[in-house]
Length: 421
Image (cartoon, rainbow, N blue to C red; front, top):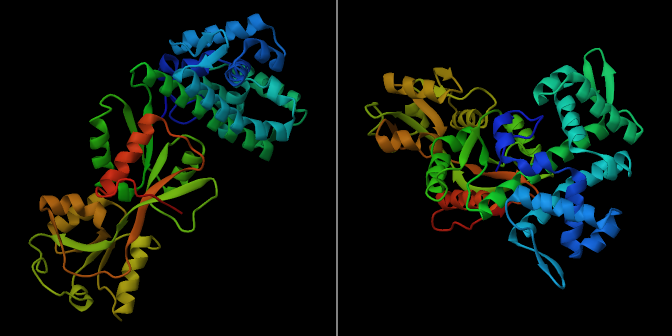
């Protein structure tokens, strides 16, 4: 769930960010480190000794964070300081924030832990993505010299170059890319912290961002959203469509919360995990008045006399379609190749074309009577549909509710069924 897109990411909403992500805006990494020390030690004195700052400085930081959170983060007792539910939630998110940041920081220079700032990390992300200081500054809403100075300071602290200056732009080094990725995920943790703090105040703050592949958009995802809305009527839900590789990259950067659609085997990369939801077979469909709509025991030889609407070459659906005809020793006589469900639906409605498509994608049209499923068994065409998330991702309560609804809609009799690949 996004409280807002962090600066440097696509879809960044500055107004929304200023309104709700106060923890990110008003707390630097040093303050968060001090808060975590108090939460872990239960003592301002021990926290000040651990972080080498004065006790009044620690007390001031705690007070500031409690004003930002609009609720107590600690219970003051004679035995020490004890975290409230809000304090527990925030301390866990801060701990995860540093788990993302520390490895790439240490790989550059151990001293960076104590000197890096959020503004430097935001500048690094923006320059990595735009490969240009001017474009990065425009994205962040800052002056170009400000962004240049932030990156230069980071390079000086690391005692090494983070970018290769080329005629084509600023090309990030591998350590810089690793740090930018860690920073993205760290900021995502802080945004989740803001959502959790707001939830404790009874507020619906943030958004859920779902990467929606084609097989999820026509039946599964609309039903999940409708169910989720019964409990969370105000929370913004955003779906993002695009090629699988692009959606996967955005998921790994923390720009998406989860990805729903056809699973890939083997799993595409080790930092994500896949959860099976349902199996989705291919079907042959046609208009309800089609000559074959009321036929029985159809085989491929009767189908080949009709024109087909199929997916483009090399797609999984098309490969399965070609295999079925090849195994029958036949070839289709006429094909229209398209990736557009809208075009396929209209062509089927107007003509005697037959469509080969996922059952999930046409479930709504069949239910409404706009299309008819032809009585043909398509062996070995089922695809596994599921959810892809970042490994070690910790959902908020609202995100977990959305996931629970997803499993309930996919498998009503066994909502808790989860298979990790």
